[in-house]
Length: 436
Image: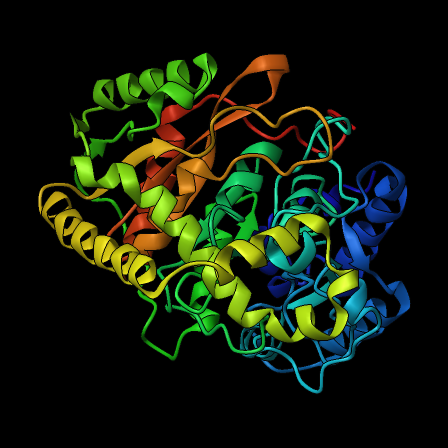
């Protein structure tokens, strides 16, 4: 397989700038990889090679100093693209052509990124999976709802990809597929042009194989000067939060987390163990309630006009959300406000929280996308989160941790996660040619 397909976005950008390769050559390598692996992975809802190569050649002809020239990116199929259909993983929108790009897509294109195609999503970014399989083991789920995005990045079919997270739809598939996953602070990047599931939870995120890729993307998505990468200058202080659901983590996850913390301490980091206050125990259920209620509102048009085309599980989610009372919704939001206030007290003492990314390795079977339990509360609280593999679990599959940072401190959270990842060692995606 062409080694260009395995480059990170940051390295590809450098090589294009230095005249060592072209955008077209990078695109050809990854399109060839996608064609060779489509039958096994099935990551793409839409892929048009000639369209991609035509745009790559246009970028190569451009004399503009575009900061992302050389970066290839997949777009989750709930995010609008004017030149590619956006079907939201549903037959209701099969072949739908948006009038314009989503704001985030438009900004990355303007910076020189090459959109490779639309990555498979679970139905309306919920729980009913699409056809994508885990590239590490096709008998296992890649996670969801950003399944195609995580799988395509892990399999070197694209350098980076959009995800969205309403419960655990970036961090969980990143963990299952062994990629890096970054969920921004709520509202940090524009969500305009992405199909809404939950107004108060939906958050943009990305998958990559190199932390530096997230920095390139962050700068392009923010107004000039509003994305300021930081460096870890001193040994950081972290909180180790097992969460109230520690007993639901697999033995491999528990062992990997404890070993990672031991490595951090040996490297000079100060790690304190923090037990979340009792009220946090109810936060995951509160998030699930808000997600269901807001899904019932945002998907009301589809349910009313095409209800028979929705999956049974999505109809159940909508029905459960529609049954929620005003008092229940208010109580859930009040709990989130209280927990956000308490979390600020934790972040007054530490640079970030280290906590599990998922309950275990990717589960066997393709009927479920796995449990978002270890991401629900952080999504509800609006924090930036970055997931990364730290150890091998059952079957040699990746086990991941996540770093959670203060709201709005995305750059510092990424820097801390990169530092922890380097110290943790552990599992790495195989280089192209070592595995499949």
